[in-house]
Length: 245
Image (tube, rainbow, N blue to C red; front, side):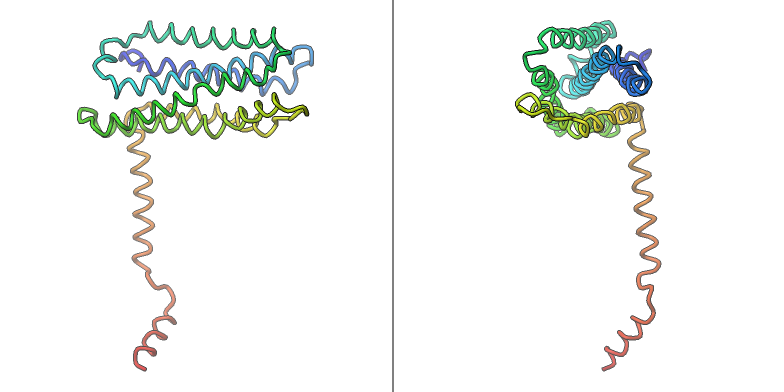
């Protein structure tokens, strides 16, 4: 897909790298000595920040395809995508370093605010895409469903898995008693698995095949119900007796 000039797979590949960093941390921390646990935690949260950044990049790229098609067609460049990917990684690492040196100044609040900033952007990209699609006639229906599927999946991933952690960190930073964000961290740990579904939506025809499969299952269920509308013959006898009376 990158050879064909598409830049979205570059962001998805970087998203996969950030997910692999998180998965490696979850595996290695079980046997890692306590002396390097702190370093691994910073590496894990750097990967977490990078994954959110690349989710925004994927949503922005899908939005530009619909909202600014001509501008995007002439401006899209693989080199630009590589530079943006480098900036996302650099920001994620620098952000954690800054938090490390100002640890006494409410690090939970700073980290949660940084994670919360992409939320209005994701909503804007989805709303703007739906508005542009309502008046667009040049985009094929298959591509429309593919783009909307990617944006909806990214927003659901962020809302269901990241927002609980953000709320917990905000409550921890403003509370005088320590709060253990174990449950919200469990939600976030499912994020790499959800990101894998993005690869399905990036492939052409994948959404149509999924919808066709769902429609086929629905039609099969309706046919089975139509073939046996009244499975109890005793009810038919009762109905006939009531009618004769």
